[in-house]
Image (cartoon, rainbow, N blue to C red; front, side, top):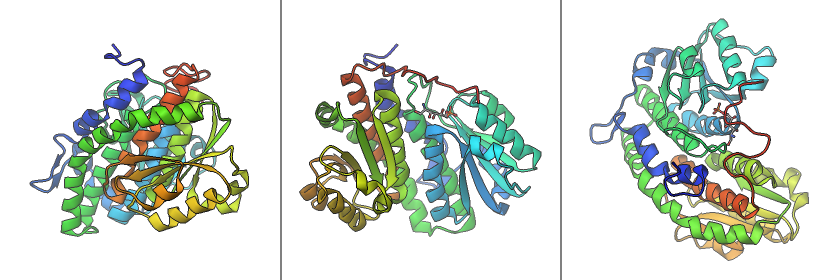
Length: 366
Ligand code: M6R
């Protein structure tokens, strides 16, 4: 049932090229310049008239929401807020009837997300669910939705759910951008073509497995790890840290790279590995100077870079090369080596990768 893999998590990591394709198949047609999801088409006016979009989720799904915030704002110029469901539901949030709430949940059973949806509905908001499990409670409780087509995710650590969530959310943003005219025709088209190239690029990114395993062997006994990224890759840093924490029990923190100087840089010494997500697109020069700051304090640097990178390579102790894509789509690629890295570290530490201690696949209690 693990398809020849040692763990479900590894199997699910390797399924990503095909499930990302499953997720956009029948919904995206680059030749015709079409993105079509019935849940969006049927409710297009609601999205177009929305004052803002509030995204509610927990854990990895919340990280997908953060990536979506950047994408929605850039592509569709809609104000987006991303909330932890557990915080949102208990703080007497301001919800208006022209708010659109997007709830993201792999399982569709997360208690806090479910409760937040109920609250939003009571306040008259339109609730759109992005779930993986068909017929799940959240998919039923939402007014409309779009499924991710990741297939069953068994490993407690979410992997393919994350990348398929980003795929669905990117398609929604593109559809809205088309309706609003906030992306030029050529940019819209370019993104459709690039999305179709993602499965191939994820496949290529999976070839980093061996180097990830080597790096894992070097770092498996560390006590702490920092993950840094900027822009679209800031949430990827958070997700990388969460993945390491939950399956290897190593303390890890994700930070926006520029926040280093506001505190965490005090942690840097020769014992602190810093994983930096530094693709060529985006804020490359800025992240190079962040890496310099770490280097000058003797931090050990593992960098995720674009193939052919020259600058980061001069500074980093280890580089993991991934194929190039646009800044906005890069989380779909940069996240792959981070999944592999935490997987191998956890295996080398003898951890129960698929069922880490204290965790359940769906968190149905608050
Ligand atoms: O099923 P959901 O997407 O609602 O679950 C949310 C979180 O419990 C989940 O993403 C959790 O953080 C994962 N174990 C992370 O790998």
